[in-house]
Image 1 (tube, rainbow, N blue to C red):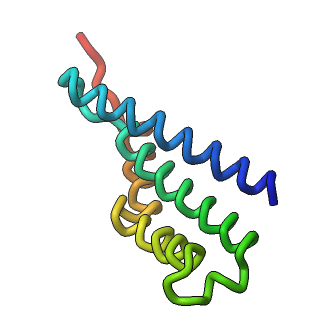
Image 2 (image 1 turned 90 degrees about the vertical axis):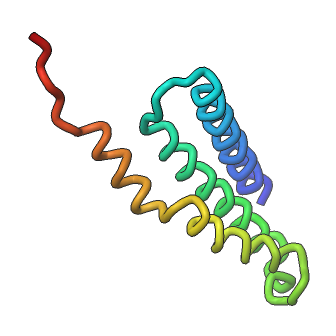
Length: 105
């Protein structure tokens, strides 16, 4: 269980780092790139990792309305909708990475 919480914490830290990079890019008027979509995917995956760890730790409590585990479970399900579905974000990332490029000259 500790390893699961460790992975969740790592996912949170990665998500936070990507979000800070997106904010920094916007403050510096840099164009949006696939990092915006990566940050959204990382946020959803972090929420899901926390939910899975919470369910492992507080399994029975997750079904109790108003409990911390139940709240986290609901948040993790909603996070994917708020950030755009992970599948859509991954599709946008792949399009930006594999888009045909124009030759200069």
